Length: 392
Image (cartoon, rainbow, N blue to C red; front, side, top):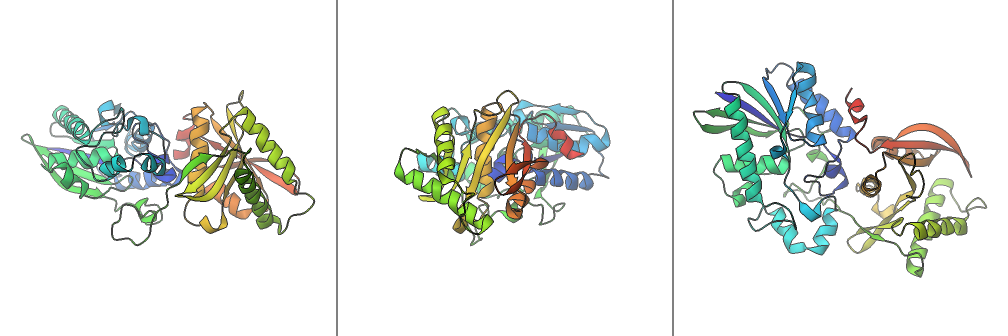
């Protein structure tokens, strides 16, 4: 009998930023690395003969929970990748829902009709997953194997193995990050011993414990943002930009004073927008403006740095996990521009901003002078180099 532990990758950027990452090569979050440590402890006394994963960063990194302590090589297979989401890749769920509500509904219900533009269908995905599992089982007869893959692939592959339809697969529930499914293969028959077990995760590090979209019985709603680019030649957008800047200053220093130069801030943003049209993005919660992101891609090009000038969420939208989605917009933009690190300056007295920065991967690398005192220079790596150091 062959035993296959089918394991979902740890929490990755798409899970946190609420962006569509099928075969987009996203990174693991800080919390995801904690999940990997918990997974390592779960498998500490379980014998494993071989380890496979998809060839994407998030699965290969999660696989280190087993390969590193057990001294096993990692074998990668492209057929273990997540569903190909085609033209939808790295867009926010909210943006796609606004553009094609019906097709997004098909995706959410695992409809056999679904296929993202230039993407893959659920049937193609499940056939690919079943074929990969059968191939691995045939090569490891009588052994125990760990296979690291992705949530949608695992759900549809397991459903196909159990003889379920796509409609039935949609009712089977979602797996937590690093959740484990155990398959037993004997005489050509595959049995599901248990599925989507996340008992190694505490509520503090469980992704699903902190999100509600997957739980139909939850009365809480997760908010997904979309973004529209500001046009600072328009009075409405200029007024919103200034309102955000002024409220941010008041919340930090108590009042507007002589150190606040709104005209200079607006002129700086206008100049950046002339150099790069998408330098100011408005975070949208449905039709409501919820925050602002200001960047300047003309800075740091030679050093492959991405400069975040201003990241802000309106007071009545705070506490709903929206700030990290605005950060995700910055990461997506600068990664597409081939930047390796995000830079952000944070006032030394702004504890909420400092806590937010460090929670989501920024580190203090120095201090610089500001108009009202010192500013922490914050850096967040967004490239693939040196990411593995976080696992140590």
